Length: 212
Image (cartoon, rainbow, N blue to C red; front, top):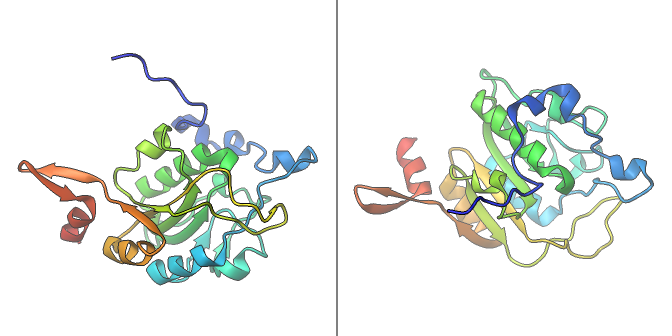
């Protein structure tokens, strides 16, 4: 097989999750006088997220204004740098709603994977750019995906009112896959990874349900 073309938005190496490395100027565009990353999640995506996981215990990438809609118990701002902090603990794993900054997706998804591996995440709804060609996206075999119909218009200080240039996908991690599929199925196509068990196709959500 030919070598795969490496996409610049691909997965991040583990050693790049050191705090000094992930402080990568989250808002570098704003510091250069260009539009930044402060785009708030639109309410019609937040409301179904609340229906699935309730109010989140933490939003790792937020603002004071954004949290008026997200309603997280705690949140990290750009100044806090949520990439350098834990989002939960094994004793009190977090419920999160995360709207991933588009120009730093690989860092945030790598951080999410790290937090899941540490047992710090109970449930998560992640709203992210649907970059299907990237490794971080293709590594989502353990998550349900909802490909939102149409283009999403985000709110916030840098919002133009125009739809996003790329498609949006909502990812789910947790113990209520059927609830996610039911709620978000109203907004787009649910893509449930298919597994082969005893030469039969089994949906990933079925496997998760059986494991609970």
